[in-house]
Image (tube, rainbow over all chains, first blue to last red; front, side):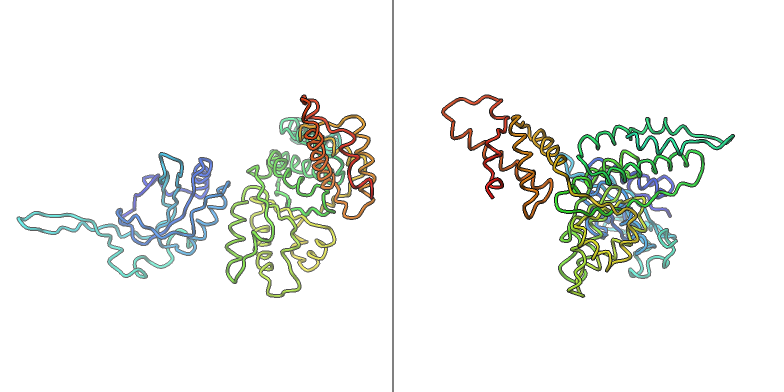
Length: 147
Length: 305
């Protein structure tokens, strides 16, 4: 099941040129761009691991692209996303976020029901991938960065 | 200006019955002429530097013409090394280079990241690589200017981390030629030693430009430009005094070309301010505040030595 999170997630995966253009747009707005990765695709997982520090003083997207490539190469079968943080007053929040790398196989989510008192049923989601220990969650080296 | 046009015109001669490009139109459309004229106006002297910039401009224009005809156009390597004595304008020209290369469409952004050894080389093992890479990332798309580049290599300490920075630099200079122009600057003799011990660096730099010392007339022209830039003006006798000052100063040790002129003018401003302050009982008009008089310059220690 294809993970749809953040911007452009219902479009085909962005090409490198398209990523460059998006990143350049963010830099032109004066936003700081960061790269993050995770193996836990749960929508409530907001704490992805940071790939280096957010880049505050870049002018050209090439610097970010170098980091994205390095992250993809190190984690070809994990999710990698790019964030753009707007520090200006009134926003002080993430303005852009999109996925730039995903595992070759995404097992998807299970709907978990739990029955409570009075036959009340609670629902939650669980990623099939997180059923395994971290090193076994995705096939090794099949993602986009492996190419 | 005309030099560049001539160079271009000679290239423009079209081969019979093949598609042609109007280089003249490309030239006027690109605004290169204006840029070169501005450079001529604002930079005094520096003949070899201007010639080289003109050649680069011509090359980039021809590349563009080749591309429009579907010929192969490899972007030329534009890494440069500026050598010359103190105060010959290396830093000034490097800072301008970004504007020129951006105007020529060679680099994507009009920005210069100026660094020295401290910004590239770390203090402990494993500190240098991330530091150098950070600087390179920041410079991407523009010009990376490394002042006093010879400090990067310290032969007396074989475990110096400078070598690591040099290797990362070399890698990026080779791999990211379309993303980054690296300009090294430093004094001639020290840069020569630096290149001798880093042959890889020497061969990856296509343009070695030597900055000549200024002549007295050029220095006076520079003084005039500087005074204008600071919104002052010379009284007519003061300009003659400045000429004498330059002649005296050039003969003395530790003469640093345009930098000495800047320092002299700063001191002349001090003396002018002091002179006005001493006579503060009288009201001063704008003219007095603007003018540097002969006595402001003649009082310099240079004349008595």
